[in-house]
Image 1 (cartoon, one colour):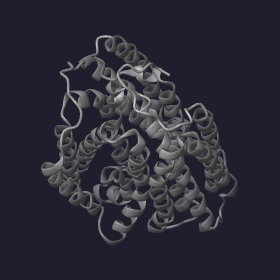
Image 2 (cartoon, one colour; image 1 turned 30 degrees about the vertical axis):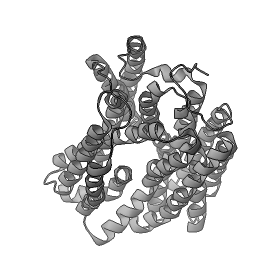
Image 3 (cartoon, rainbow, N blue to C red; image 1 turned 60 degrees about the vertical axis):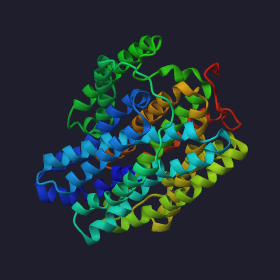
Length: 450
């Protein structure tokens, strides 16, 4: 969870970092953009890494990168060193998340996967919501350096425990690394994430670089996918897109992308609204985000147990509807003097909806695959989830920026942005409706696509 906390804690510390290193907001933003770019570039390679290296090797490498990056960030004497530290942190995080899902699928029986995936969902989805609250509390008492120091003790303890108790899971095979695929992956997913994360610069006329990055990313994505399809026939693909032959996987991924986009866009936009339109402090903003994260932390394991009993649609369909209703509430109710309780209740609804949707879909999507595709399916899921989050944030903040540029107040612009969240929820609902209704069952190597 500390790794995922790290994605959103730094955004709260940007003003303090800008002041200490005397850098502009555009330059400081690279602490966030660089992290997302590294995640987008490294995650697609994890399908290959999980097949090639043992679980212990990957775990210790990922944790070592994260701990080393955190210490380097805390001690950074210059801004460029801090950016390097964030890249190292992101590399460790990018390896750990797909590894978490792959190990879960290999060691947990199909009858209990929902429960365990609910706990995984706490890590993946709740931590970004709690990150700003944690950062706000730390900054209220200490300096920004301590945001990175608090990331160190728990991972160090886990590494010590893993050294004595962790065992390897699954089998490895000597798959050769296709270097051209790595290069194509960097250009494809790096271009897409950079273009999306800086999209507001294009909308406001500041730069055309985001448009160029998006065009490059889309073009190289097509080239990358074509190459992977050819390599898959020889079992050499860096990322095996054969997982999309399975309907439940494909529909679940579509829903995850749109739901996570609406969620992350909401989590990133509301602090801007609360501090800019309502004039709230950083600490109070973080505290108002906290109940939603806590609610999701409670709801995700419960949703996992319910999934084990009733399957995907009975949870995910109401969850997608709840997400749409909560986005509509934010659209209609946000204003210059909106009471804090309205924001808190709406955020709780958003987070509970995430638990109801993400827990069953994470389980159903990967359980639909044969064992040989677990690692690739996990890498695809996490890659597209990153892209969905970047796109959701770009769209919601972009809509707000356009409305403000046209003369609307920040409150009016923020409210209008949630129309996009409603649309995303409707698309997710349509995709969820096509996912198999019963809980996922383990598949075998001879499984036929469904």
